[in-house]
Image (tube, rainbow, N blue to C red; front, top):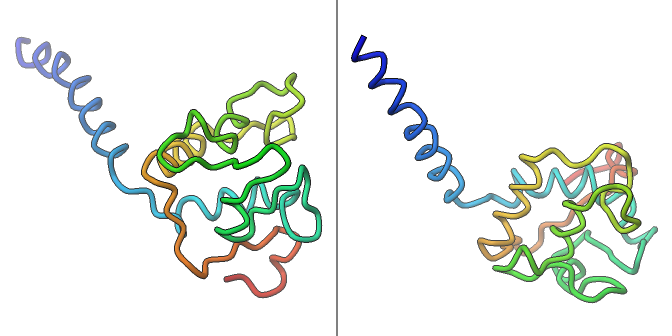
Length: 138
């Protein structure tokens, strides 16, 4: 019985340590961030429909930002509008995505961690809007 209690007492600590270790792992832009931005942001923020003056297709354009200024502040997710609008409730007119379905918490965390880690975006990596997925994807 003592073993069961010891295991029950240690299990939460193991789960927390594993979660912390996973959070500190580098976020890969191409495999983790790019699919989120393409599927949830690029429908409105691409070259043919630049909603709020924001085009997220390339690193240069994304870092430039939109009408509200820069949306990505590398190393500072809490100062990055790209991250902050994900946390707003849909009663807020600037909440993103604008659909009733919020971004999954895991995806919010990926965006947070990516920005926190410096918002690395490999040169030459271009995002493809969902409208163009039937065409060539990079």
